[in-house]
Image (spheres, rainbow, N blue to C red):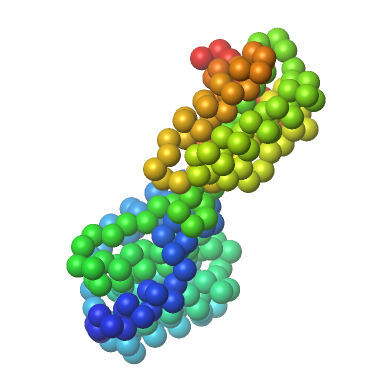
Length: 241
């Protein structure tokens, strides 16, 4: 079953642009498993009836998870409007084990739709922390100088300077945690054409221009937000290495 160009264009126009970067975070292990599974078979064509049949498999309570993974992969690779609708319907109430898998399948199906319309290879971006619109989400820690703790005025400086840096570099400071004197943690949304190091290192420099109190090395990731135990280990690694 092949959609015509006009139908594909109208359908893609109805999907928000922010869908090109997967908004919800997907853990790295799931991404690796999905990619390996996705590359295990080629794209094909199915009738609308067969496509709807795959959708029924997804909604069935009697189909094992592995069977639903295969159905999601087949639908994603069809790259048709009907296939997208079946995945979308399942995404409203997916099995808990397949929530992230379904998001990847939905995005891959859209990617193939766009590729068939533009007659060129398309792609999408997925990370552990997700993103919004054309920005990816990152988490990072800044630390005080060795054997020191941040004071409240210093933490206020960090907050204010990073807000200004983000504004200058088309980024968004989403959250900042000032509750711990041993570190400040920040999540930000950053466009793809800006280097993460540019934002963080500019912010650290501006803070230190007002009195040297921020350690020059830092920790940053777009895969997960660490808990306090993990942060303790991260701080040791950053300071030692």
